[in-house]
Amino acid sequence: MKNTVFQGMATAMITPMNARGIDFDNMGRFIDWQIASGINALVVMGTTGENATIEPEDQTEVIRYTVERVAGRIPVIAGTGTNNTEHVLRNTREACRVGADAVLVVTPYYNKATQNGLVKHFYAVADASTVPVIVYNVPTRTSVNILPRTAATLAEHPNIVGIKEASGNMAQMVEMAALCEGKLDIYSGEDALTVPMMAMGAKGTISVLSNVAPREAVAMTDACLAGDYKTAAAWQCKLLPLINALFSEVNPIPAKAAVSAMGFGEDWLRLPLTPMEPAARAKLYDEMRKLGIKV
Image 1: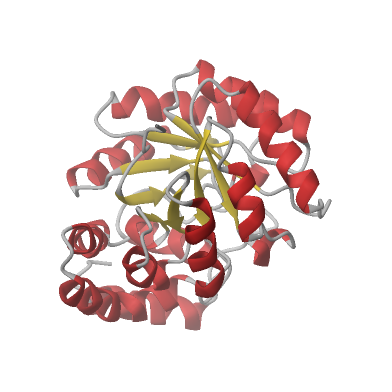
Image 2 (image 1 turned 60 degrees about the horizontal axis):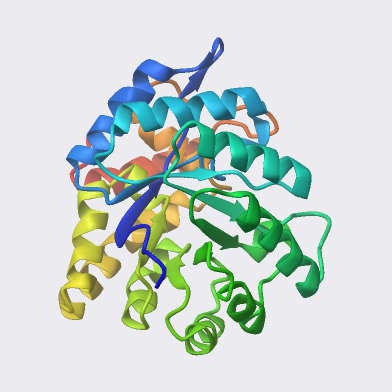
């Protein structure tokens, strides 16, 4: 029987940065605030963490620092995926070495592997990893979609324990759940679909929203886990305007703007990402204020 890495709400964490590099002081404060807010896990060096523009040695340091700061309070999941299998193996071994509890591995973007290629890629990573592997399906970013039957094949590997499903296709998620027969924990990768996906058996969400509104996001998944879908649906509807604002420009641009306005460091992104446009920023801050978030 495979172990579940987490249930509920995991934050796909931003990486505080400034002109000098990684801002570890504000990262530490942010980690502590997230845990105090009830988050069930932290994901570092994923898309929201700007992993594509952070050098491998700095990625390892961010993972190591997060593991040490968290100090076992909640699971730390490290993003280790790239479009090069050998690089993923290196990143994964490093994440394991510095103490990550699990790794999150995105489909190899740009190369556009076949379904057979995806299986071989993820099996190679799972064979090399000493911690559980969660695969990440986000076809809008990678141009590769893990089909439900492929997910069922991945579920047969003893070290592949979950999938972050961010296709936005509920029918695909339902078919995936049916074919995997409980062998693969499914997590929503779409904040706007947290409640519908958990109603269909997803274990929780790997979230951008919870960077900004962790207590509210946790209340939503807690209600789902308790079977109170009326309360959960009310939270989903209440949070939807903020979710939409957080995706009004490409992630993590809005999340970085929001977290900076909340006092966790500078609104600093690495090119080719640029700070949020004024009109979208004003709308984001307005939605934050409506929820009582000070900016």
